[in-house]
Length: 535
Ligand code: BES
Ligand code: MN
Ligand code: ZN
Image 1: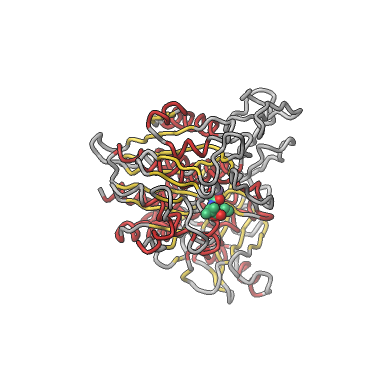
Image 2 (image 1 turned 90 degrees about the vertical axis):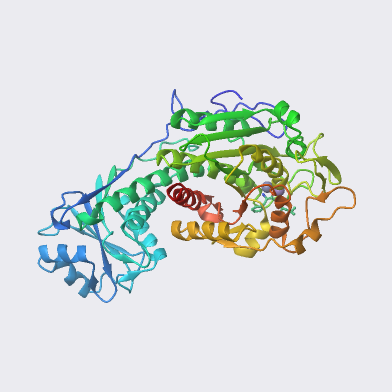
């Protein structure tokens, strides 16, 4: 691909367009339109809220005219101004609402933002997240250059200061995220440069600082995952993903190796290669390693589905919303984002990321329904539907994972539309037959507010994958489509502890808010943080 040009089409000819873009992630060199990065730092500060000099201070207020501790301090300094405002009925304290006040007497900050916290003094985790997000969104609407969120004092059921601080940083990073790289006009520069989390007690400082460092790292990992997901498939090709992995490796001292088609042939990855046959883009198999523990420490292996565009192949998908199949590499993106976060947090753990990546295209050489291929494991597979391609690339990656003698393997894939029917967009589908591992991943999802739900993986479902001609078929019919996909994968993951996350419903949003979510980077990083600290 020629740098700076959008190129590569279904027919493979290079198309030069009048528009040139930076095709490198974060490469803003030359005359290309620049990505305006608002680098917002997040830090902690212990101080009395009324004395904090900044452009905007945010404090919580509850329904029924109740004030949080921080709001009460401001109110006292301001001679009851805040309470009077609540009495007037102009701010009802509902979660997600905010009210901006200027030049409040006795308060050092230029603006005071009242943030609705709902009815109960003890917030639900979801409401805390929503309140924090709304606060940052409201601050972004002002001309404030810096802001202080004094929201860590309110209590959230089941969570400590570190959790609240982490969620503040994540809510901020979520509210601040924009994907404007493909717009020809420079977006207006935003004024906000710095956010500080205010805390009332010195005792909370170490926890809050740790939480914010984690939140910043996870947020940056999510941003990377979101950027890769949002990039169009003519830019984000398998080669592009490999380049980005190399770049990430250089930035964070990760070991990166990219296997080419010939390497995959030698390894006997017949299932993965069968998907790549219809595409002009060469497939890649990315191996990316983070070493945070001793050489002998067995790694956690993360395997991410990297279909950079899923047309369905010869079993062509219908046209409606097909553009969203550029998000079919969000599993791969989440692996890269998670590795970035782990490296920034310096987790004491070894992690291997495996990313099989290719397009799934129709074409003269493409696999046809009924074709039989031999996977790296030796099992033969009858491809009854070329649109069930994710499991074909993942099964060879799962076999390849064996060589790392993993302590655990987790694969992450936008695997089935059936998972979206089963669980919607709220949680990811979790499959594993190891109860302790299921508990661990579910807890990580709860704690990160990036939840998953344990689905069955019983032998009974394997029946549906029987083939008349090969060892196994790649589809199991319409009933329990997400379960049979997981059952298919389990046949290749018998030699280690394994879990599968179907993120088809959670990796991106459709409609007006269309875009990648960065999930399940929070779940995965929580899982890794816990594994690293337990060892
Ligand atoms: N990438 C899709 C899964 C998908 C579809 C995710 C729609 C999100 C929204 C996957 O490769 C696929 O096409 N799966 C098929 C499997 C079927 C042919 C057994 C599906 O879900 O329809
Ligand atoms: Mn498909
Ligand atoms: Zn797919």
